[in-house]
Length: 337
Image (cartoon, rainbow, N blue to C red; front, side, top):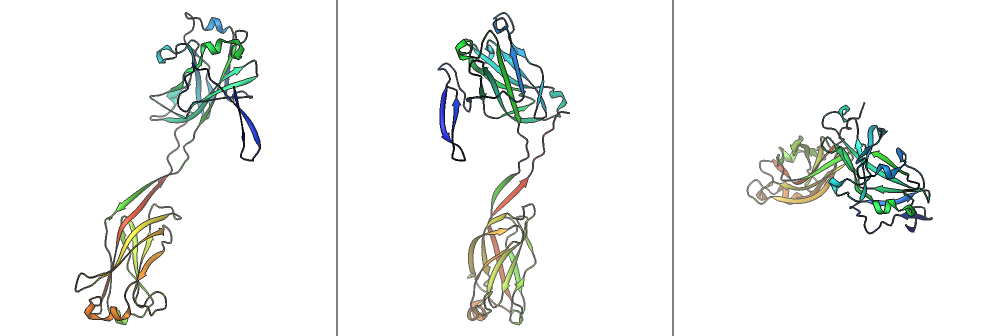
């Protein structure tokens, strides 16, 4: 036995006894062996006259009665001389089986954390053997330990597991309910629906502070453009262009979409467009607006520059990269009735 001293979450010193396994005991990955004072919560069974029970020509496997834990029915399966078909020769082998599976619907699966117990009758403590969580399903209805304890260790009376030819085993079974939320994040490069376009006629006669395009769909989300003909700050800085998210179906309202985009004021007589790129996070509900100042009044209204033609302005936006989130709550697995 090894006793480790450490501080708990409240800063107080505490001791915990860890089982110091014999060299012959093969610990699998994720297996933890500790001791504790109190018995198992769900099931215990005692064997008297274990020497008769474990004779080679006696009982190869013993199955306990059924017990309930976590809304399901279970039993333990003990091999007193080891499960020789699974490398358990020379060991105690112990398994947890799910029972009455015929009451479960097709395709059932149950995630479980379980612990096995062996009572140390000398020290009045329980050896607890715990493995990583396991998934029970139609093709795998039993999990456990081929090599729970070496028989040499178990039969040594000084270890306290077998005293006066009697021993006690037990189990705790904790079903992990699937009530978690999950999400799937995808990054979409150059999604369908580009570009988002907006044409403003009679530009020189526009008198409002800003104008918004009809919403347009890109990657299943709705977007809009907002144009400030005289700038978004003081109305004197020139043209400002912003991109806004209108609607993001299926995305929780508080979540943000990571968006890489390009805004563009079209040059209608050449390919020398005025462009600016940005990377911002748009809130699914309420969206937000992100953009830039583009053209000074002098450049904008100089018809030779090509941005205003026949008193019309054309602006565009491309969504270059977009994070798309899918969230769901999986169904709760069927329980036994």
